[in-house]
Length: 136
Image (cartoon, rainbow, N blue to C red):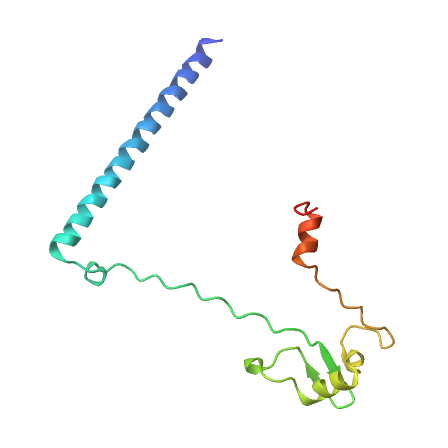
């Protein structure tokens, strides 16, 4: 190995050793500061408000975008996106279409003559366990 590379290697080793010492020193100083802070809070009966710690509030989530229209009745100019304020009852025209079985003709994005896909039955826990080889 050339003298230049051996010198760089030695400097890297020293640097790693110094970083390890620094990390150990910081860890000890933090532990000491925590012991002191707890002692002072306990001795003087201090509260978080007196220490003026910032109050953490959950970050406000941006409003979710409106859902696209799911059902539309062009003859009457009605539409529904599957939501209802406070998750209440469905609009009367949707409920009537569900009751008489014609709801799929109002679904947006499906060609008029196309039937709805057959509903898929969710797998039972036992079926999933068998698939994973947990049950024989």
